[in-house]
Image (cartoon, rainbow, N blue to C red; front, side):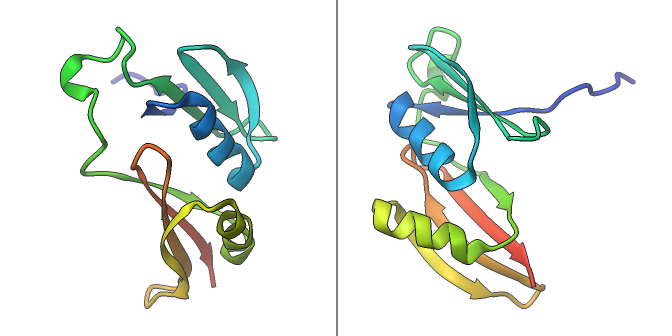
Length: 124
C-alpha cells in the first residue's frame, strides 16, 4: 500500500479571485501561488492546503466542469461565531447561522462563490 504524503482539496471555480478572497478572508490562508488558472492557499502553519482551479481548465474533464454536488468541505475553527461575524458583512451566502448541534459542535453553513457547501464548526 502506498504511503500518503499529502492530501489537498481542489475546488473548481469560475472566478478565481472571488474564490480566493472568500477563503482568505474567512480562514486566514496565505496565498502561496496565484495564476490565471490555479491558486494555492496554505495555512499560516503550512499544515493545511486548499487549491482553487479554473473550472474551464483543460486539466478538468468536461463532465466535471459543473457545479459541485454530493460533498461539502468542513473547516473546524476555534470560534465559529468569529467566522460568522466576518462572513455576514461581506455578503457571503449564509445557509445556516451558528447554532449548537446535538453532537457537541457549534456549526454554521455557507455557500462559497462556486456553490460548494462550506461547514464551519467549533467544538463546544
